[in-house]
Structures are given as structure tokens and as C-alpha cells.
Image 1 (tube, helix red, strand yellow):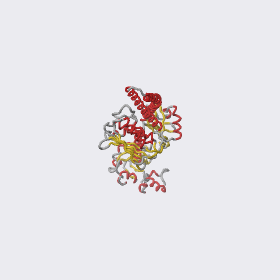
Image 2 (cartoon, rainbow, N blue to C red; image 1 turned 45 degrees about the vertical axis):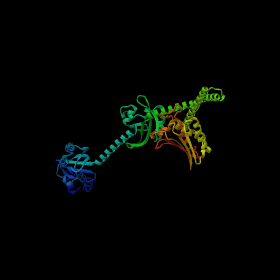
Image 3 (spheres, rainbow, N blue to C red; image 1 turned 90 degrees about the vertical axis):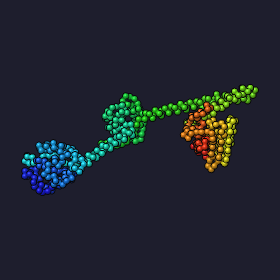
Length: 493
């Protein structure tokens, strides 16, 4: 502080409260301290001295303030400063108050904390002392924090169905979505209560154990809504800092739809497994009796032609029923065990496929079936299963393809494995239906009532069980080709 200013201090200051001469350098340093704007105003509220910190708020030199009314210098904040200055002129100490506005034409809005006190000389007002602290950055940072908080709250509202903060179970804060989920009008109705008030009794030990251990992995519980209805939820907790202390934040997801779907699927699968189990076991005994009876009648001889035809039809129907039962059993075992079980043994594939072709030729005397064998066809195979695979593919092509178009089978041995191709140039399957061909219980548009729609599904499962694959291709010139690749060594789990 310049000595000239100190020398102009009121004469009455030479009292017990007057500063000694040696204190004047310290007073100068205090008055010019960085970060605090200071102005000494006369009785007409004209600055007689301002420090550099206050001058910098307006972007002008300190001497530009001297002698000019403060309210003229800062017209944009004058409406807020005027009543405060009037109180200071009346002899009142004015506590710090926020003031916001533009202080200079070239600067943006400032956020200030202002304090005023009267300067008295012998009990008579000599002027007003004005302190100003610039809090613009702090206010802006607080605004940014509020915006980030609002942004995070918005993200939380989108990411989960509700969230809350709690300290050892006592709810400190919650969002409206959680209140609505629990059947309340506002989140304030939850604050201050213990979270177990909304947890089903049988799940309370689980929840409190998770809270006590600070579990940070999702877990499922059942909550009880305000109206008493039960709601399955998933909870994920994290430690966060809230108002300077560590608390727990929990995200809540409503999983009622998922649980309902899981229960529906479980009931469906249970019913299907029971149904298929009964179909595959309880029907075998009467079927075997029918097959034994028809076989005995056919071997007895002496039957008239109509009787022989009738017995033949019965035998054929029994064979179809046996085929369907085997498919049901395979499907049930595959679903229960997570895949078909194969028992590979050393052998060759050509007699297996040849036998299947011969049987199909006898069953379809009017159809032309070509078979080509090429290369080394040895390997470790489950022969009965691969016979079933070839029979299912050939039967599907014969069933759905035109009767006047030949069916071709080609079995080719190559390095590492064997390829089986089944081709029919008259069969048409759109490319968009290829994936659906191998779904269980799927019947084609021209399917006969002899099958259950499991043939291609089981064929693919047999290929997969051998470590191979089964695909289908639509040829450019027309026709459909099934392609099976099998490694020589079946990769049995």
C-alpha cells in the first residue's frame, strides 16, 4: 500500500486501535493480497483507492477507478450493489452475499462474493470498505459438477430400472424410477428407511450378507412392492463417495419378464421331456407285439392276397411307428445329455451306405438312386449312427423331391476325412430356408404324415457328435445338395 494512502488515514486513528508505524508494510501486503479485490470508497461511493485484484475484474488500471462512482463503473451489477451500499452507508456491516453480472464490456459474466463495512472517523462516516472475492471458476465448476451429476443420473435411469444410495442399509438417496418400481409417488418416501423393508423375508439374510461383504457381482432377490406384490429383481452394488463419505450405490433391474420366460421355457421343456420319455418307452411294448404278430402271420403262409396286403400294410405301419419312436428317443437323449452319444469303432463306410441305399431301393422301387464310392473310406465310426444319418438324408430327399428325378449319393475319401453328398436336381429349397431345415419338429410344405420333422435335425446331431458337419446348398442350375464331412477319428467327448 502506498505510504501516501496510509498518511491520509484519519487523524483520529491515532488511538489504541491505530496501527504502529512498523505494521504498515504488513498492512500494505494485506490490502494488495492476490485473490481478494479491495476498494476504499468515500461517502459518495467513489473509489479513492482500489487494489490490483479488484481492477483486474474490470480489465482496467486501478487509477481509472479513482473519483468515479462505483455504480457508474459497474452498471450491470448496480441493482444488486445499491441496497448493500446503502446499508453500509447507514453504518451496518454487510455480510458476504453473492453478486453475479458483467463487470466489463469485453468480459463474460462474473460470480462474486461481496462484503461491505462502514469506515468511521470519530463516529462519523468517512466512507465504505468493499471486499470482493471472484468465485466465477468455483461457481462454474459447481455448475459443471451438477451437469455431470444430472448426466450420470440420466445414464443411470437409462442403464437400470432404478438405483439408490445407502449407508449400512439406510437409504440416503434414490431416483424416481425406483420409487415407481416399488409403487411410491416420489423417492423421498424411501429416504431414511432400511432397504430390507422392501425385501421378501426369505431373501433378507442374503441381502444383508451381500451388504456386509460388499459384494460387487450381480445377484437376484425378490422385493415386495408397496401393495404387497412380489417382484424379482437383479441387484448390482458398488462403493461410491457421497458427500465426502463412502456409501453403497445399488442398481436395480426388473427381471420379472425374464424369470417368467425362463419358467415358461422350463415348464415347456419339462413337459416335452416327460411326453417324449413316455412316447419313447411306453409305446415300445405294444409296438413290439404288433411287429411280432405281423411277422408271424407273414411267415405262416396260406393267406389270401387281400389278407397278405393287409398284413403288409400293418407291418409297414409298424416300421414307420418304430422309426418315429427311435427319433423321439434320440431327440430326448440329445436334449437331456447335451448331444448324441456315439461309440466309434474301426471300420469302413462303404458297406454302411450301400446297405442304406439297397433298403431304400426296395422301399421305393419306382425311384432311381445312384451311388458312387471313391477313395479311402476307412476310419473310426459309429456305423449304426452313420447309417441312420445317411438314411435320414436319403429319405428326406426321396420324400420331398420329384419322383421322376434321380437321387445321387457320392461317398468320397480324402485326406483327413470322408465326404458324403446327397443330391437331387429337382428339389428346390430357397436359401432363406436352409437354416430352418435342421430345426427339430420341422415339417416341409409337402411333408408326409410318416415323420415327425426330426430326421434332418438328428442327422446333423450325428454329424456333430462325430466332430463333423452337415450343410445344405442350393445349386445355381437347380437342385439341392446335402454335404456331410466326417473326420476319420471321431472326436468323442
